[in-house]
Amino acid sequence: MREVLTLTHAWQQALDGESLARLHAQALELDVRNGAARAQAVKASVLQELTDLACVAVGSLLTPSGADNPPDSLVGELSRSVQNHLHQTVDRTLATLDAERTNPASHPLAAWENWLALREAVDDFEQRLGQDALKTLWYSRIRDRIWSWAYREWTERSEQSGWTMSIVFDWIADQADVLGDLPAAALNRENARVARIAA
Image (cartoon, rainbow, N blue to C red; front, side, top):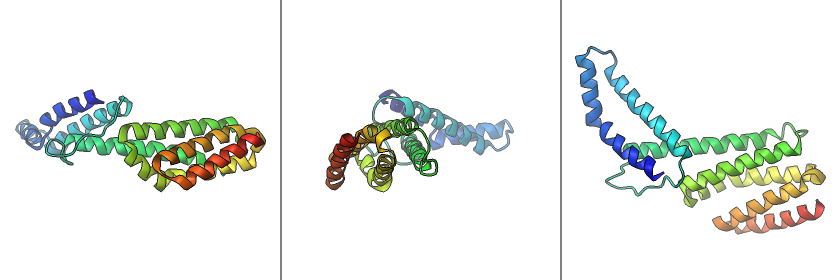
């Protein structure tokens, strides 16, 4: 991620307001239509490529804010773009779990695979954006939906999915512990214990 941020800073100098204005002026000299839009399209293309790189890079995207990284800088735009991508990935995996309510006959293995995809998305989210961002996501979108999904899976198919849901309950409890959500941690430790016994 450090390399991606270094590359972003290098592009910042080539895509700041003054540089884009020069590019627009050159487009006017060459009688290119929509020069300003084309100059912005170059920036958008670079930002998309940097976002793609940042989404597969190892490390945190968190950078100190200040004079070097104002919100309207390319680094600031990259940060927002990656955050948006990570939120969308988590939302897609949550939607897959929600869809299982309308298809309760799906195989337990499919439920487990969907859970693994969600866990990977959440881990990726935390790695890139940090624990504070994860805490906000936890309370706003993750905790209750995963908890209710796991409980439903367990109660409806306890013999088939009791052991796997005990792992999910343990994960919920571990996350809750780290994020200071003690009631959820205690309840899901108990859920995990009972699910293991039932399995």
